[in-house]
Length: 418
Image (cartoon, rainbow, N blue to C red; front, side, top):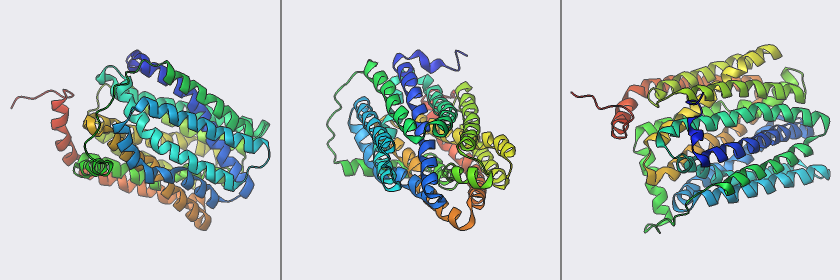
């Protein structure tokens, strides 16, 4: 167990882990409440896709700019601002819900606002992990624990959200989320962080953005990993957006059913995160990415064919686990091999690949679900993910050869005498 939690030996990371765990439970409560509210108001799978699109498309547009800002500015202060703004966004949703004035148009507008905030928050948070962890050898463990935190909240949040929606309505979900942000803001304020002034760059922001793009595209292990993640996020992740439609029309359930489905997926994701946290080395994560991507695709395929709640609950842990492991393994590899001066920009591209492409998938999934139904849409996504995993498997030997010198230089693997 101590090895599983070794990153928590760093005080700042320990504070962040506690505060963020509380906040993320609130975030997942809001996610399930927003999805259910939109579907309750409209009964439209297409609008579920549109809501997902509006919440994440700003990341695709703004993340590269955010990456330059993260490399230029104090990441701790950026996080304080983004978390405070996120609290105000959730509070606005709560006020609209309690006053009975909430509409789909308001939800879409506030989703765009949250998307803009996330475009800056996510690369800042990913890059700040390195500053919070005192021992760089604990970085992979910290990334895995982050994923455990996200997916632990993914289990608890929807369960609480489903109960709150059924008993009191969506407004209390939004209010609870707003209150939960106090925990992460307090943890950030309690940290002992050196606010060293970063040197004023001589180059223009557009030149730094171009340098980051050239670095990413010029190194196959980075762009191949990002492309795989983007394909999986675009084609596979719409299943989460379509979950309310599956719960209502395929499984003939309500908010409780949706909570059960999200919890089952979260359990698998948490198990996957704990597996990564237990690993002592980043060596072999390329093979893990292949296996997890194919597992995710096959799980989606079986889930799309299910008309039984119990079968769905049995298969969704494999879906959630496969996606989480692929995402976190990609994050770990990138954080390990990236040059420090470009970390913010590379993590911005990671954010684009995971969150930025998801709105395209959400919109595409909503349109397809409106035409061919949610099950066939999820089936198509599952098959696409299996193909993407097989493509990456073919490239893996070449990618290993390119990453190996970096691992040797940084002491991750020993030098073998000829």
